Amino acid sequence: MNTLLKKELSALERMTVNELREKHRSLFGEENRSRHKDFLRKRIAWRLQALDEGGLSERALQRAKELANDADLRIRMPASVPVSFNAPERTTLVKFHEDRDARLPLPGTVLVREYRGQVIRVTVLKRGFEFEGETHGSLSAIAKAVTGTQWNGMLFFGLVKKGAANESK
Image (cartoon, rainbow, N blue to C red; front, top):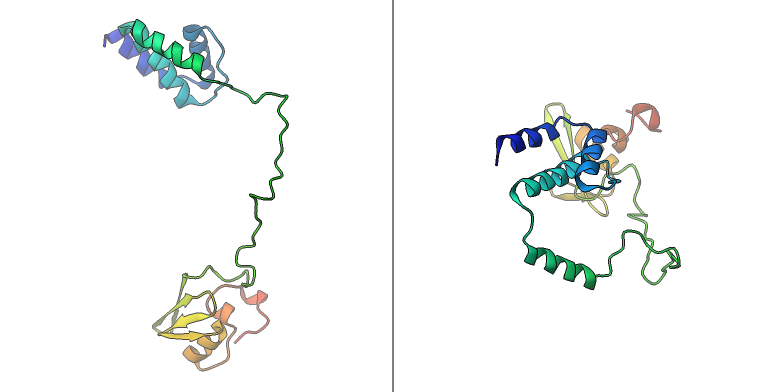
């Protein structure tokens, strides 16, 4: 690769999108709709190298033309084709965890809370919560087991703010 080509390639890194589009227009003789810098840089760099070192061989160009003739290439969908996005046999709407409290994290999440020097780890299950090998029906039951007093479990584990909870300590 000659030094002039190296300079041109390094100059591409400093060009703006509009400058790259203008360079593309001058090299390819046509407008490019892309505004993606990396794409434009790669296309321009390929063209500069092909012009400097020679492009594809005649045999490769001929084969590419043959392949292009066989392909039904379209850039845009034809306007005459009706578009139907209503495919009920393939589309199913399902609510994700519809029976769960939206304030709770997904099953498998581990809630961690430090209380009086003790680290409490609770795993959220599909139905209930696991704490120290036992399944509990609510976070409030775990909070009561840990503290010995009645707590709002959501508040105890920091899932709601103090003003949002109906109960407090």
